[in-house]
Amino acid sequence: GAVVSQHPSRVICKSGTSVKIECRSLDFQATTMFWYRQFPKKSLMLMATSNEGSKATYEQGVEKDKFLINHASLTLSTLTVTSAHPEDSSFYICSLPVRTSRELYNEQFFGPGTRLTVL
Amino acid sequence: QQQVKQSPQSLIVQKGGISIINCAYENTAFDYFPWYQQFPGKGPALLIAIRPDVSEKKEGRFTISFNKSAKQFSLHIMDSQPGDSATYFCAASPGNTPLVFGKGTRLSVIA
Image 1 (tube, each protein chain N blue to C red):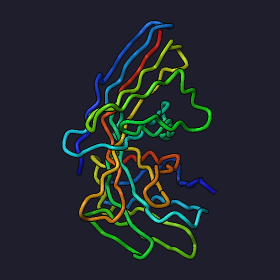
Image 2: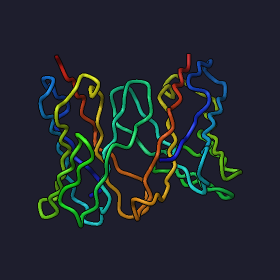
Image 3: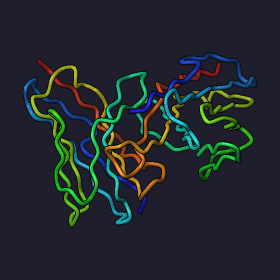
Image 4: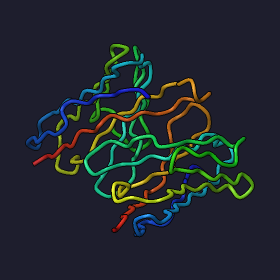
């Protein structure tokens, strides 16, 4: 499968500050990546689809001005949480859809996640 | 229509036993059904996946059973081990689109 890295793995910030989370594809070109948010003991909720060289597509209810996504290269997508508040504290995970030889459709491979805590 | 309903919410299985997790869907456009395993503080890892033209797929101790007419699919973990203790998510998607996830099942395998 594909290898996806995220940085940082954990971040603690003060309310009102901005935090940038990086998601890198190490062995496949990433024209598309997905960003998910997961609250404790809950399922993954899709936030947005990141598209290389164009604007991200946000899911209903996700504030595009608060969660800025940049996908400037085929290996890197970034999510910036602007003016963070305690309610933004969550586990943020990116994923990469890859068409591997064993499936006709894209399999999704997830990064290790970033734990954001806003004080 | 976009939901994937997963049960049970939690499951306790004796070591060596069979763990069974079920999922049901409504959207007939779904045609890709993966299962993910997630350990605390880690990202989900793809375990096994199936497409609707196959009724069963086995990889090692993990088997997916798929019932297209009932719109249900399940994960069976044979010879469950304490190391299998994790949260399992079923998911589905119509073609090459983002996955819709079930709510997850917390599996505890006890010795």
